Image (cartoon, rainbow, N blue to C red; front, side, top):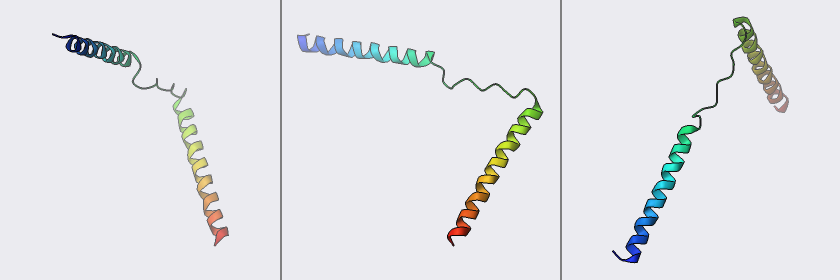
Length: 71
């Protein structure tokens, strides 16, 4: 083996070790963020859902009114 071949093999080994290190770090990190704590009761959850629905409806009504003004 000449010096170039040895240097190439050494570089491949180092790059492989670095890639292995990154893979191990990725496996330690959580895949997804922890879930949000659920509502205290079902009633709280439903109330929150209906608040979101109401906000969506309000935005939709405002958009329709804006479109009506431009015509």
